[in-house]
Every structure is written in structure tokens, then in C-alpha cells.
Picture (cartoon, rainbow, N blue to C red):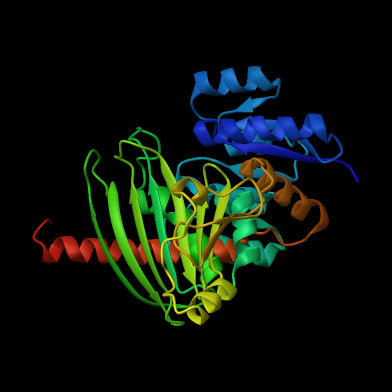
Length: 356
């Protein structure tokens, strides 16, 4: 089977990463992919990227398609406002597409792309990168009945991605992850948010309740003094702490045998353990004693990997085999729908508070 020839549309921050990883994949697996072209309307950026990767650069998708260059797939890394129009143009030209998150600027646009892809039998993947974080795979393996999630995604302010608010820029990562882990329809959404350094919401706090009774709290900020990307979840007998940046999963579990032994000895569970506090730090593998008796800590083994590389490998396999990508268009639409619902709640709260 010949390699999949791909084009990257948009050579900004996201697009440059796609270019880098496609070339990395091409060098490691020339049978899998061939980085064939890029599209970038800004001339200097286009010329620099095209020169760096020794590929042709085009000012528009229309200009690219006029060349009849043989292509099978595209990464769409342009501003969100253009996602739907670019996807439709490429789908009609016979390409499968991976669209960076968020899927589109509106549900109408997302539905239009979905319907077109289904009619043409084309693959659409959505770039929810954190789904490919190895720590997420470890969390899925440990999941049995999640009842509470707490997500924090904080970032230092940059002028990147100011075409969307913080919910569509940052929080949508965690919305997608929690939707996939909770496995239940959303029952209620409450949200508050404020613009700080831009004209759009820069910091937001959200509470979601699912039909299952599970509750999730989300905080996202792009005006923080630090970078934080963490998700914590609680389920019967266990607490999981996932660090996206470190690709680590910490599990704190109730040691039922230890609790039973304490009860049999007339002791109360939770009595401070005799081990020093430093022992609460889990080793690289296996359990450690928690400073609270009856609890154990374990650092789950997580093989390190670059999420974008794993995401693009998954997309290329779907293109080559006609299979389904891990984050298909329907999942991207679900995360977008929830993000837009949150933004409606934020706008409603701002109006009630007299901020509009």
C-alpha cells in the first residue's frame, strides 16, 4: 500500500507542529505517509515553512487543487472561523480530513461537514489531542464508576487562538475527555466566565451534572501565572489524579484489608499511619503507604509518547484502511455542542449580573 500523501492547511503554531510530526513520521515510516504540500495565506510564513520542509506552498486550497497534486488527506490547522469551509472544499476534492479542535465555529457548520462527509464516504477526525495522551489510556483502564471529576487547565496569556474564547480554546479538551469517560448524557450546566485581557471570555468555571448522577467541575484560564493541565476523578473506593503535562496517573485506593484489620483491632480507619509523610510519595511502580492508614498510593505505569504523533498515526491508519478514527466527527460535534451550551450559560450569567 503506497504512503498517504498529506497537505497541512495553515502554518501557524498548530500547523507547524503538524508539519514537524508528519515529516518525523515520514522519516521513520516512509511507507505510512508523505508530507506533500502546505497551504498558508501569509506569504512570509508560507515561504519559510515550504523552504524548511522542501515542499510546495500555496496561498489557498483553491490554488492547491488547481495543481491536481495527488493527495489523500489534510490537516486543517487554520483559525476556527474557516474550519467548515476548508473542510467542505477538501472533502469535495476527495480528501479525508483531520480538523484541529474545535470542530467548527457553530453546530450548523459542524452538521454541514458531517453530512457532506457521510454523503461522500470520507473520513473526518477532530484534533482533540488529549485523547491520545498516554495517561488518559491508563485512566480508562482504571475506570469503573466515576462519580466526580475536577479539571483544571490554566495557561499563561499569549495572543494565540484569540479568535475563540477560553472554553473553545482550552476547556474543550477537558470537556471531550470527561464526556468520553462519564459515558452519560448531560443533564444540567452552570457556568460563569469573564473577559480579562481579550474581548472574549478568558477565565471560566463550569459545573456539569450528568444523568448518571456524576458531577464535573471545570476551571479554565488563559491569564494564569502558571501552566496547569490536571484532571482528578473519584469513584467508589478510589481517587485518580491525572497530570496531562507529566503524563502521570496517581491512584489512591482504600485498602479494604487494612481497614478491616483496624476495625478488628478496635482502631478507627484514618488513624495516621506510622510511616513518615515522605512515604506518601509513590515509587515509580507499585504501592506505597499513605500517611492516612487504610489508603494506598500507586503510580500507574504510563509509557511516554507525544500525543500529536499518536493522533496523526491514528488518523493515517483510518485514511489508509477506511477505519474509524479514535476521535471521529461525531465526538468533536458533541464536545462543541457542550462548549457552546456553556458559553450560552456564561452569557446568561453575565446578563443577570449586569455585566453586559
